[in-house]
Length: 478
Image (cartoon, rainbow, N blue to C red; front, side, top):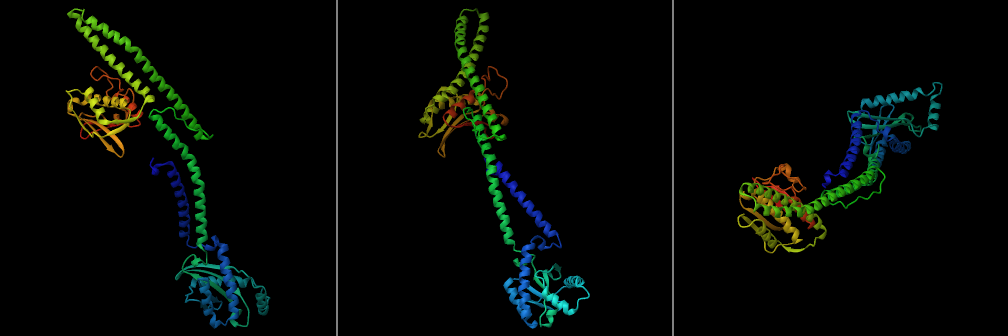
């Protein structure tokens, strides 16, 4: 079976398509969302990194003069791998790299500071504000996240309130991490853990799916193999039934069907063998009596006796065909495979079936030797040659070729006749199948010739096939 067409491959590919479809929808969602807040999805990881950096930088700002803040931010930017910018309430900017603050961000900061001022009671003095801000300085303050188009940057910032001797520190400071990528080069969020998680989920899913799929496909493959044998006439095969699901039920039904088919086929063969054997003796006696009667009747009645003799001879031929088929079936259990020279068998078949009036051309190497039963091989070749002579003997010479191909002997019998309709070729080797549905004295037979060929060749562990020639002709290959 082609693996590309197997049930296992289809189920597995469907699973992969499912996974990629879900992943694709997620990607499309993020791409289509203009203001997607990455922290909403990766909140803990993003916040931890940003607030950790904010605590460290705010402490260093208290210990450093403002004129050196850009240098300080540059050092932290190198450590964290991202650009930092400090924006004061007055609008002054210190950054590790030259960064243009867009108006959109300034408006966002103003809204943020206005909201903070509204939370401070009006009766608290400036001195109390400073002391309160110093003592109750929060470790984590509300964040600001923004994606600006001009410049195209991602901003994530936190507001800090510190009070020391440095005059600038009495203002609110906004510390921003700035990046031109949504992930912030791993600062906003690190995609590697998520990729690892997705890969792990895929691996676990695959490890879970493969045994399940194999659990379905393995018994189906065994069923196909068994049914292929049944199609070749092997009714002694059975499926192991160890399951209680639908597949187990199907296997039990297949076993019952095989047993029933085997019983019917064996009964048919036994009946044909018995009836043909029982009819042989009466037919022979009738033929003997008619031969004697033919000598005693007058000239007027002799032609009637001759017609009866011809009909009885035709009947005897049909019975002989049935006997040959029955013997071929029974001989399968008595096969002795041994080295058999091919050319002598073909020559003997030609001498017996063709005679001198039929032109048969052979192309056979004298050294070819096949492992087969000589008697069955000769019977098979005889039926093929007889069939070719009957249907195409008048169309030109019949060719018999034998050659060695990859360790196997191929014997081909070709004629130049009209061939067989293409839709009949696959059924030619079935018992009692005839291309011409009508049966008369000229076409004769009951459709057992090629069936006998198949039985004999199968018993020799070989195979047989048929095909039409181009532009005409018919060939049977053993």
